[in-house]
Length: 138
Image (cartoon, rainbow, N blue to C red):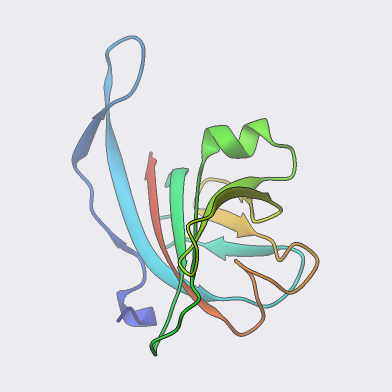
């Protein structure tokens, strides 16, 4: 189980072949958690303030057996292409994979922003704890 004391673990040194010029850049990974506040926009600050977020995976933290769970993932390209942000969403209680808008609405340097779709819903439902894995570069 992830706690605030384990928030912000990052693993430098993974190498990704990223650019057309053949340059290599390091990929950094940070894990953590946040609690949704049910507001339209919530900025989640990372421990590594220089991390340029390229990909994120968010899961609902479950502490008991439940039939319902959602996982959200997106990349900087998807967020850039859809003006109000979007994420691939997988719901464990079904085989449905969809793209939902107004979920992960911004990926930045040292932070990302989640939305509640103006309905107190995931990935920013009031009182719900979420775990995340962020990958990015410096």
